Image (cartoon, rainbow, N blue to C red; front, side):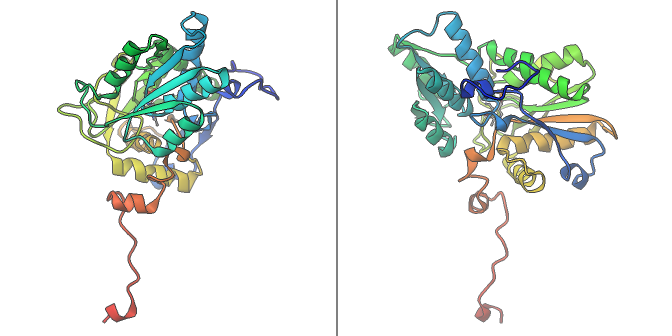
Length: 340
Ligand code: PMP
């Protein structure tokens, strides 16, 4: 990752292109929702592997290499909703390290194909396997680690490098670009982003409001049994170790329909080719900016974690939206004999 400052003209490898993502102002969406404040997107989908998780994957593998945990023949085993898997597979491919990715089967085929081509072995687990079930992705990871003495896990859910990377880089990039920020809105899967960015913002800009978003069905903010939802990468069925809720001022719950329709609107109106959780986050940002009555001149930043590529056969596709009842089918043009 490059420190802030000069951008080199030539890079030694693709991993050096991670980070320093652009911050882009929304132009049409704020108006259409009656927002007075400015809304900015931190375009994490423009990282080389397509998500904000490239940052932490690279940092965790680097740290493990420096501390001697990665040696000749080491296999990396990572539990993930897919984007950390892509980041780890990318880093592993460039560095010549073997890796196995363990991921619940609700995550997109597009993510699986990307990891497969990057050389990772993929183990898919049932998405609804409870955290106590041996088939749950965290338990399957543990079992692989017990059975293969050359396997190690970066374990993004407990690795301090996860929030630290966002604290040291993502947050600094936002402050460097805007000077002040009044509200920052992020999702929480591992909680690394919101914890790292939240901590830095609370130190440097203590008045900045930190908002997170949690899907209906997740228990990160919520009670009862977890339920299936389709948005990927945020929420979950356990509270991750790296998530520090003290950095968060408010959580907004969103559902799949709101998330996917907003992601499609961002793509159509702003040309930002984002993924589904970006829709949840932006939906929550609009709601929160209104609730906190953020007026002219106030700055709201949303993190857009990943991009359209991961979801080409999912919310990007009209038929998928209709089949899942997230979108009304278009009015059918009935044949003439039905018109009478
Ligand atoms: N959105 C997407 C699409 C993701 O893959 C992730 C990572 N799980 C997040 C949001 C949330 O990031 P974090 O793990 O840092 O909470």
